[in-house]
Image (cartoon, rainbow, N blue to C red; front, side, top):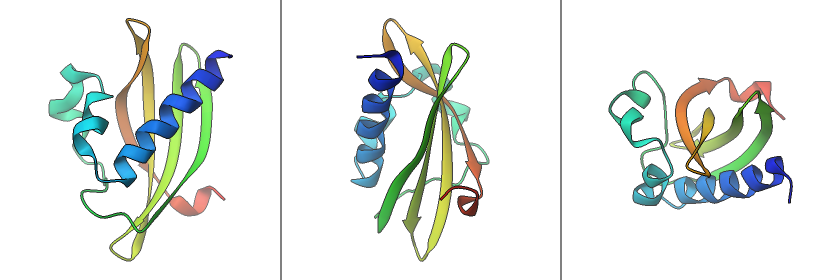
Length: 104
């Protein structure tokens, strides 16, 4: 399995946790020291999700980028996460929003 395939599987698992409302598991897949500030100014799902889709997975140097669109509360939110490999495991290190209409 290639590195991008390995990350794609990890990211799909993470998005599944978010979509299921399993925030404990989703938070465990993040860089723990970043948690106090990673959500500042970022619109993220905080409850029931009506729909979700992964719209992009790519390498960016030694990091990986995952993009998903979540539908909840009658609106769509694009959420991009930047992942770093820590002790052999991909962990989300940063979050930012993107306009969901930018991705098909």
